[in-house]
Image (cartoon, one colour):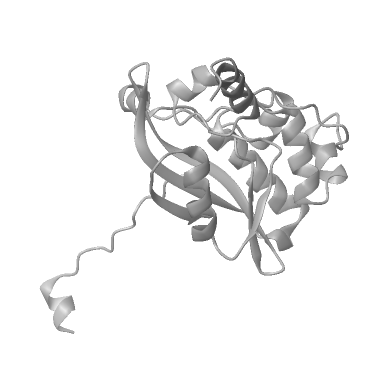
Length: 213
């Protein structure tokens, strides 16, 4: 290749964002401003204005900002030292739409469940091979999902806010594609109805007499 063209090609590929930065869940580059989306002055008004996942997604694309400092606080390393931080509830997130992947996915799932129950909004938790940033270990990533006409769609991704991926036959199909896009190995994934960890409920021990009955 011409030695003068090589640097130009590298700049072009970087500008196009063909490869995602594997060390961050933040958006790849400055997003193009969304031309049309349904805005609202309050979260309660938004619940009246928005009707579909597309309405919600357009607002996310225009408003969401990634908070890297919060990502560090929510890392496995920091949570092990100081305990878990609360995830922003939807009405707080609407007022100040800045946070990390789990804040965004909670906002999307809980909001879509209110405006379109038929969409069956849910969480997709992805476990990547861990990366370390400034001494903090990052492993988990959260998105939101919904179904339509028997197909699966995924959105509210802090890596590409305002993007809806789909349709897919199932989550596994999306995961295979997403691993390539993120340039990271996905160790496991789970479809969940909540972002909160559920405590196991242990059955009470039975006495020997009860077991004989």
